[in-house]
Image 1 (cartoon, rainbow, N blue to C red):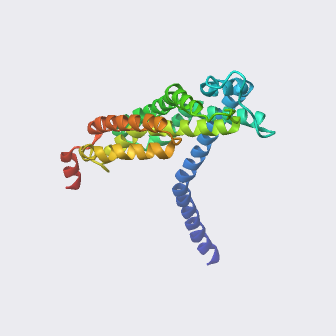
Image 2 (image 1 turned 135 degrees about the vertical axis):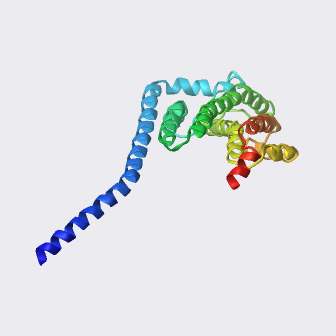
Image 3 (image 1 turned 30 degrees about the horizontal axis):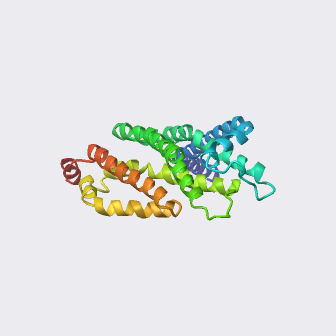
Length: 266
C-alpha cells in the first residue's frame, strides 16, 4: 500500500510545484528585467562620467561663467575647504553625467513599461517621455542663459561698500544645482497637466477656471524655489504660468470625452 500512496502523492507535489513555478516565474522575470535595465542605466552614467571627468575643471569654469563675468578684475572665486578643489568639480561632473544620460534612462524605463501598455496608451506615453526630456533641458538652458546673468548681476550690484564678492566654489555649485532642478522641474508642468487630464483626474476646463489661483501659486512656488530676490522669482513664476496654459491646451486634446466615460460607466 505504501508504494501506491507514494505514487499518488508525489505526482501531486510535482504538479503543485509546476503551478507555483508558472505563477512565480513572471514576477521573477520582471524583477530580473528591472534589475538589468537599472544596471544598464548605471553603466551608462558611469561611462559618461568617465569620459567627462578629465574635463571636470573646464566644465566648472563654464558653469561659473555667469558669475565670474561680474566679479571685479582683482577678485576671483575661492575654495574654503581643503578638498573642495577636487570634490566640487567631481560632483558637478557626476550630476552632469546623470543629466546627459537622462534620455537613455527614460528609454530603459519606456522599454520596461511598454509591454504592459495598450496601443492607445503607447501613442500618448511615448511623446510624453520625449517631451519631458526636452522640457527639462529647456528649463536648465533657460536658467543658465536667462536667469543666471540677471540674478548674479543683481547680487553683485547691491554689495555694501567695503565688502568684496568672492563666492565659494562649493556654495556656488549648490546654488546653481538648486536652480537647475527648480527650473527643470517647473518646465514639466505641461506633462503633469496632460497626464492628469488623460487619466480623468482633472478636467481642463475646471483648471482653466482656476487661473487666478494658479497664477498666485506660481509666484509662491517661485518664492520657495528661488533665492530671495524678485528677479528670479518672477522669471520662474511667469514661465510656470505660461506652461500651465500650454498644459491645458494639450490636456483638452487627450482628455477622455464624456461619451466615453458614460459608456464605460454603463
